[in-house]
Amino acid sequence: MLSKYSFMGLFRRVRPLLSTSSDNTKRRILLLSSLRLGSGNAATASRIAYELQTSTKFIVDCISVDTPHTESDTLSTSIYRYSAVLALHAYRAGYILTSIYKDNEQNNLPPLILIFAGTDLHSCESKWISTLEYIIPRASGLVCFNYEWKKYVETIYKDYIKCKIIVIPQSVLLSPFIFEQLPILINKKIIIWIGEIRPVKDPIFAIEFLSYLNNNDYHLVLVGYDSDQILSEYIRSSYSQLNLTLIGGQSQSFVHTLMKTSFAYINTSINEGMCLAMLEAMTLGIPILARRNTGNTSIVKHRKTGFLFDTPNEAAQYLIELDNSIELRNELIRQAEKYVKKYHNITNETKAYRNLLINLIK
Image (tube, rainbow, N blue to C red; front, side):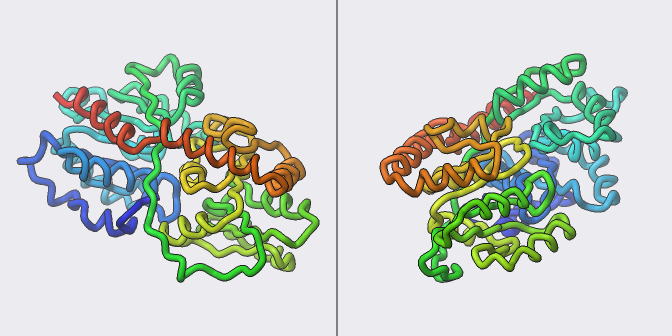
């Protein structure tokens, strides 16, 4: 999540597509991503754009893949002004680019870097396959967030990969705290869940986890924008449980402040690319409970940087164990903070993207 500046503030500051000047061609980058408020892709795009603009000589124009097709039509004529294209989410961004990156025009187009974001890997729909098989061979660079997903891409798309796959882990950039805006939960230990309300994040699992906590010492707070109305309504119908609150989407500052005051963070996603909220919680010294999946196991080492679980009951037992041992809690926090500092450093992330871009720009 974006630090220091609001998400929308950043994108108001990046220069609009139509104002691109040819004078800056050698250092102007196009970043294509979903910019849907509250999405993981939007948070990743905002951080990468902000860091490239403030720490390098690149100018970054961010264009949403969620905009009407008329804007993508404009992109087809403006793309030649860019030195390179960063496409966050191989399918969503790739879909916009399939009509642009054609074989007969390949030599005149800026180098394309595809960044695998998560659902384009673990939740890939059958209708996406043809787009991915088309756009992957046209990429000059491929990026995965961890080596587990790199191996997956190398296996699934081995006949389509024409360039090197680079691993660039997500990094963390925190927001200022705003304690005065937090809801007051007296004598409760907050378990925080963060993510869009949609099936792959499986918030129902979190509610089931809560049912295994027999005492009333804990309060589960679900933070996230509604992406699935039916699912959101089902969660609201669970409000008969007095220790559950759904507070909807919130600003980065609010979320980071609520994290800072929480007893533990829980991730119940069926699958993850690399969970940014989890890395933020680890940075803030919040113990981690994470459902076992490829993305989560790349971050969390069981009983070293957090707990990994498979069932709601197992998650509840780990929370109770965490609550009963101050020594264990402190050690998990210490190891998690050490891990994030070493492997998810924002300076290293920015340097990796900078080097990749420089190597591809002729």
